[in-house]
Image 1 (spheres, rainbow, N blue to C red):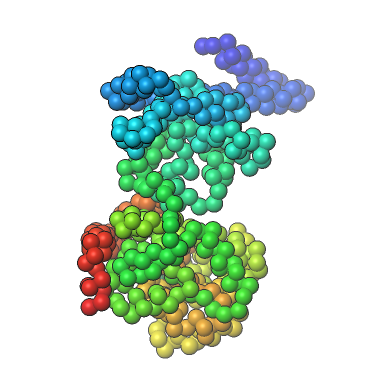
Image 2 (tube, protein in one colour):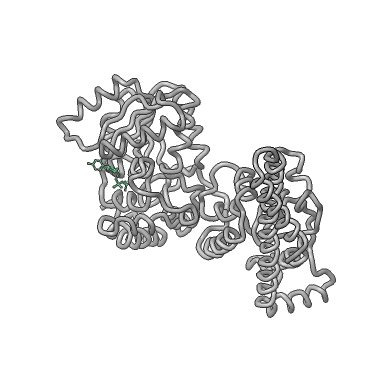
Length: 468
Ligand code: UDP
């Protein structure tokens, strides 16, 4: 037992004795209790920090040992040429400056190959062993880029910068919504050794199949005959925000791999999607499709992640939302979800999604009477999008969005996949696991069909099939 622990144990014994003596000494007891608690609170993170350091040294040493056949000859070759390391001055924990190391591979031949394979980055493992960096943490920031005096960036300097961080993983799997500083703050307040190990595992998977976070070049991407708006979540929200202040009606559709499979067979659906104001790319399938076609998709802009941001936007702009779709108890649950987080006034009306064609005029009239600005329709794709194409103008809503199964998530009927699965684009695996009987065709067969079709498009064989 160390001295600090003995001192604390003695303090706790004294506390128990004082409490046993009754109220006259209760103030002193209380102050000791607080002191003891503080001490415990301090020691637990200290132990966790020690464990993190041990894991860092262990993993960095192991990685250097495994990669020794690569970096030792590389370093020897660079030494013969005169310079082994490139150094970038960065800010580390508590704003302390350090040199971020990279093997000085440049130019053509082996140098170029080394850079393409990312071998130059292996040198940063020495920064980890020296204690300047960690395996996981916020990206190391070159001096002058993110000042510790800048309130938004301050949190990141409470920990060592990492070789990989949550923002890095999210960028590679297309779910980097919002801002890096917020992701850093989240990491700093929630990190644990277990969390770091999970993050490293996710980073390894993201490296294996994620993109390089390459910049998307085109505003629209065509895939299987459907034109997708290649925008970020923030762009989409800004566009919707603009529509709320303008005249006219605008339809928004989300398309995932399953929708593109349907559009492949269904010419009317394909034509309808061509007429929407915004068609957003949802899911890892489209990212993979974009990579195959050499047209990178910028972000996974799906309805479920957009929904809370849209509610926030509506609340800020005092716009009214009408919810249409799903079972009565489910739509009531979503209404409650919004009322608890914003205000009951944000939702101006709701109707379940199990009505027949004869009831449609009544439903349209109910929406019109509610004076809704935003109409969210959850009837499943492509029915919801066709419903909007036919009736949105008559409802008087400025924006109509087909949102698929998201009411089921926000009402709590179906749990959403854990964050780590979403970060890796594995939400579909979770959906399949929840409802295998309903989903097996969509995912097990549909995903393969989708990739085959995209490959055909890549090889120039798709146009003929789509025209027929
Ligand atoms: N739904 C509905 N009426 C129907 C069929 C479906 O309201 O006639 C609802 C269903 O309850 C679910 C939503 O449509 O909440 C979307 O279902 P699904 O999971 O198939 O949508 P996806 O996200 O796959 O398009």
